Image (tube, rainbow, N blue to C red):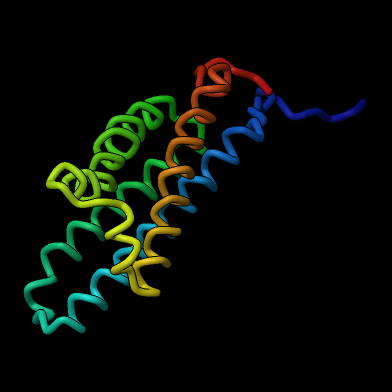
Length: 157
């Protein structure tokens, strides 16, 4: 007689590559945000700002980075609600926070050519990071909605 386990079989879901890619794009966006924050803090300190005056903005960014990491991990684990939280908080509000200053500059009469003429090497690094940041966010946002069956409770790989 062959002994068998009486436990029910474990059903595992296979994570679609698009969801894994979305997760890593969110991590790229997080890394870009950390890089951009580092540049901003360095420039502010170099301009003579006191570190104490930067604590609140740094704290807000750290909180946002932590929330993003938790939501991205929930996305990777198949928690469907995380897609909507990421969409509202980071694709919507987050993108707005990334483009608000440049948009205000342009609406106030600034020009792209003037901004580029006055740019330093740090500004160029910041710009490249910001563009990658936005592309990562928007690409991740599209990808995370391309595998709806992964987020269903009864989904099987």
